[in-house]
Image (tube, rainbow over all chains, first blue to last red; front, side):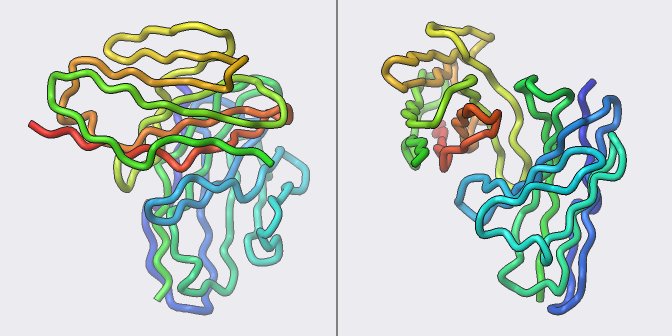
Length: 116
Length: 109
């Protein structure tokens, strides 16, 4: 149980285009989902926290108009990188938590984004 | 500010034992996690400590001292597949995970 999937697993796009990444909890309902970014040889950096049905909370320095997060259902959250640039190339990972207050987060397999 | 410190890289021999240390300073504490991350993959959960002491799970053990802001992950009978990065993360008072930069563990035959 507690499986989180991400789609796509990798994507290559041209500069200026938008890319949507989906994060799904397959066998549980996730009240909270987290989006992380990880650059090579660096730690995970939390981008935003999203709760189902409400606006995402973005970390300082993360542009909410550039990284659009939608958490429309208890099993799906999407991250859209708008007008992507080469510096947005990174490994994007989502995680999901079942209920507020429970500590464990279940991670998706990650999405490798390369912007040319 | 919040800070998690762990060594950048460690090397050990197959079959041996290695201890990866983690020290932390965070606003509040709701537990400490250890995750394993192979290159190009997402982290996978190894352990969770919220009370002081040692938690053993097979070849892996994790220790926590809250008064010292210190934890370690102990890996026994090392196998080549244990070559990975090991991430220490602390859950703060807002239930946010604060991540360390990770320790790259290199296993040599």
